[in-house]
Image 1 (tube, rainbow, N blue to C red):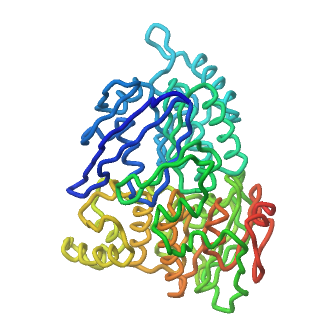
Image 2: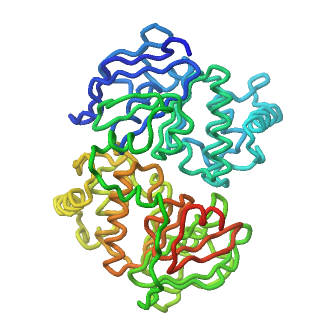
Length: 497
């Protein structure tokens, strides 16, 4: 490889007086895949947002092709050949796949968009990436994994020389991951550079040429990926001598025996045409039921249907033996005793509102009545921020400024203030580092021990294995296997799916 294509020296960044980055030096070579790892809030995404022009105010120097640059906007960075695919996608759900792929670059003729040319160009780009999807369908109708691939196709079409991927495999099935890795190899061969941010350490080591570890806003160490291993990365991420729950799923997991506690959630013959059919399940008090499947298997849609966000085409749902009327969506589900934390944190959190308001919203009728009581809201929120280890511990900070793992803790804290009978968690650890995953595992187990019936839905086998007492496997919209009271490995789960 040649000399550095991109160099950053002495980069520092603060938010509300709190240091997010401190004196970071970083370089990226042409034709290099550079992996970044670190716990949530370590500073890696902040640094990449500086490179991508999202954060314009910072200290330090950035050089591109040896020349000083300072991007004032994402458009400046794109014009310089830098594109970023964020963990929280920026696709427009209501627009078609073709419109999203060519967003801002639609082909026109005499000032009028040429829809035929746009669809043809989008199809060509999708085919080159191996994405088999109709360019005319709305992006919002696609599974999350395909939406992510569409956004990546848009960045590639822009001609970016430097591509930043923030948790690109967190919503992908194993075949989609393989397709992405093959694409990264082709990009490397053409001289394009990729920054690969991920909490899946095996993925980082497999795909990267160089790997860099961040901790607490500092760049700890960089090394060639070929000469380090996962324990080396973890030790530098969290320090030596830490036993990580997030790594406990590396081997086989012994599931619990069937519980005799009362059934809190019962579903019979649930169906949503085209998504899943004839799904029945039962969850007991103080039990965590895991539902696992590849993206597109129907498990995420099942969680939305159980929460009232997706109308059922058939079947019945009961909570504590009473039929739950879910047609009213979230309010109806809450009245029935069901709480739902979706896979997209943006869908349930108010990014511009402070942490305390995002936590207290579940109990406003208790603490507010007619007039809101901000002091009481803050007091309740501060207790949860401390007990859950939300960082930084600032209840007045907009929740959108927190890392993904800390946003997930805020989402869970909301339901700690108002314990439901049933808690549905969709991809609860997506995009988290091992430390944040440990925290979420402990929180969820604590809710289980409080007697709540919990359903954990995920396409990540590690998440299901680290949390579930019992596991259902879905494939093509149907439950095909149950694991209970036996030893289960990641390989067995993948084979069943």
